[in-house]
Image (cartoon, rainbow, N blue to C red; front, side, top):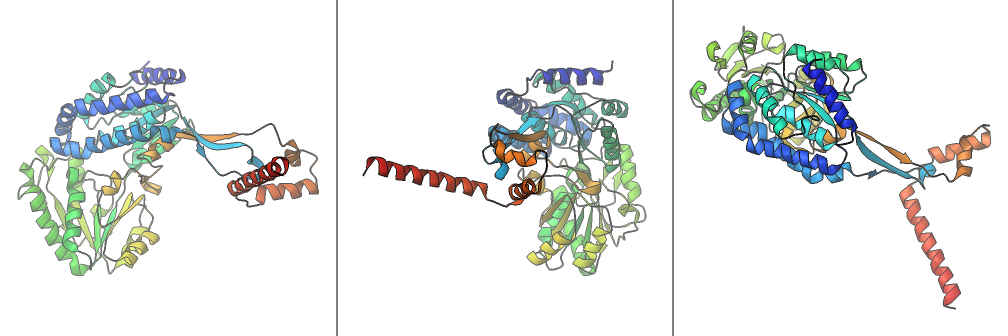
Length: 488
């Protein structure tokens, strides 16, 4: 039996003991995970530095800080999330208990991604633990050093049976996908996402797919262009462009293209100096395979800024391409690198048409001072997320569900949304009373019974208000009885 099979069997057996159900156990595991991030900060940063050339502070800002916030939120809100949630009754259930009770799904498989190997892998784990599940954690083999540190150190803090880390490549992932889980949470490409969903279908396993896509960024000619370009430059070139929600390309009118290029050039120099290659806060492409893929996408494009590269270091400078068309090579797939194409359009309506002719992106960005234009673009496009006048920061808002739609994914997470995504919600507790009312559903079926059924099932009544009136009527009746009986 392979390591993966052993880990899955052990995790399922441990879950079946009921160990994860008490909130106290879940809270302790979350505290342990928080302690892991605090005590092993240096180990995590060193691993990410080896994988992607990211600085220690960059790792804290983009990997572990958000994780800490997510864990602290779960610690604070878990009792509230896990508590029964009353829901509105109808006339047939007026005397019954009707509420939503979250319960753990069981065993969850979390398949992480290499571009943010800690944040993207452990954020779903926070929700899995909070919801009372067991979880098999499969970090990406591409971020090799991070996967190794996770495998060696995470079991020192979390329950080894319930939350095993399984490392390995494609073969190990395929083997895990052949096994039965109660939910699969995958972050990565649309191509692999389809294979994950196909494997899950064999066991009717539900999936959350956090995929990618070419996220457009429309710049209105009348907006504050310097501020817009500053935020776009940051959002695009963070992590060397290897961010699933990075602006993939710019749409703007031809009249402002040169101004946009000028402002982005200024910001690249301000953020990364005149020589980003030697600057510690500018990282590297993950490996040579991806380096060559990104470089190939630039073929035939007119470089307006950057373009320098060094394969031996997997270095590609922050690059802007101008006068790109929808048929250009760089527009055929998600770039996932530090290359930003600019496509000129006549205005917002042509931008909307351009976006809608393609697969639904993970996010649509727009920069404008006009609320009407923002609302128009939001109403006429479909995407996983929508953000006006900034980049990436919607990922940091735990109250917002984060996820894709169509080709950019399905399902959502962050904060309570992860808890609900990895929980099953139920239930109704009826009383063994009111059998005369229930008689309408029993055979033989008659026109009179059907009339009563229509009344009870279709009549829109505010049951809460009805109960308040009933209580008030009862109190009035009781008061009248007391007056008559004792005060006359």
